Length: 104
Image (cartoon, rainbow, N blue to C red; front, side, top):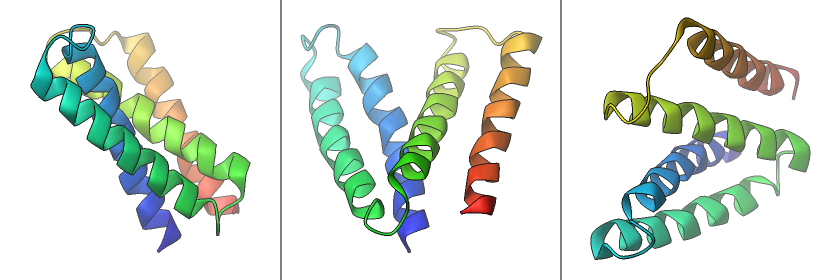
């Protein structure tokens, strides 16, 4: 169960990071509200997961999921481009997250 909560928290990290970018320095109320809610839920889930998963592993998995999904969201929204090099590095990052889960 802790791993599911951690994965959901990593997804929420991507949500709050994307909402933060869309908030225009907190000038837009809807993205700002989405940022605040998803940030609190993401941190709460990470904290809860750390009760069962080692801190370093939990944090690395949380950051990895959030980083990869944030890049994907930006690419889909055409805010960033995805080069072959960036795609390869994201695949390596995903592999590292899976590897951390496998050895934990």
